[in-house]
Length: 434
Image (cartoon, rainbow, N blue to C red):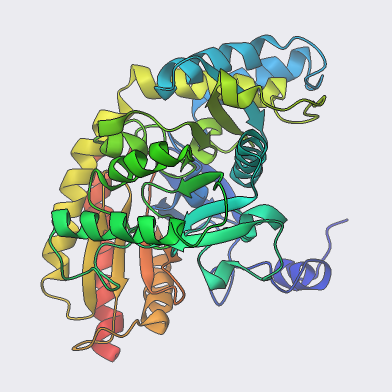
């Protein structure tokens, strides 16, 4: 018998108060196809957030659903204690694509767990619990990853197993270096890094950085900044962890990995990934050169990381992405969408900045005529866009005043134009009231 109590009431009764929901009247998504999803009332939406950048190729992609169904019909679970053909096949592909020499791959169930593993590897390899992280960053919600998250809105405790030092440079248009040109900005950030290292006692284990900050509002430094950091890190023996949970798999259009915009001094020592590779299935992972990956001297397994079903989904999804050049589509369609958004922004005073790369765009809202964040306006635009049939994300530093756009990478030109039109109407509707 169906429970007659509204689903939202049931959610509030049995789930934590801090488990956030979008919208004043939260919606239940029941199914999807391509770049669209439907709610329980039959309303159809163009999805510009893709399950928080997780539905990377398309909703209900036949190639992925077929792979999942066929694998589930054979065996659903075995753990890493047994040879696992889909896991080995996906690891081979990821290792080859990573750009890291002599790469080893370890699969997890989420980006949080992937970053947690990267921290375990780095601190063990370097025999240090000191970590460099970027201001405004987000790396997950485990005890260790919360402690390196430079965003108070996502860091519920100051207790930490790590000693974290925060470095400038990840936010180009705010902070003490904002008025500098790109070269001077990079030089100032490198100088800040050197100064921070002067405060650390002994050897720092690693720098962890998102090439484009996700939860932080799709902010990024000038190209080459992390490559410049790499020179300093290498001199001190410090590892570089590139958190590619949101930037990986070609989403930025210009590059397959975000770190490749900073590649003048080689690849990172450790790369973490998740979200899009599973197209909705729970896959995360770590890539590291063998010397670093094999530094653990105790036994370990993963019960659910590398599950045959999720690995089969990843193999099929990655094959589809490469065969259909979705990175190229992100570059082409994302470029058109970005131009359209900038055209809108020029006539909407509340839009402070359009930023991002490929199909990863952020719209920062401020109170017109000021540089003060406008989180209420961002929330109102989110609501108005949903009413118009468009789902967006939200984030941005400590004030959530940035609209986040990250649709499936198969987005068409027509869908990009449709989404931009709905978004323009929502922005004008809300900002005219403001």
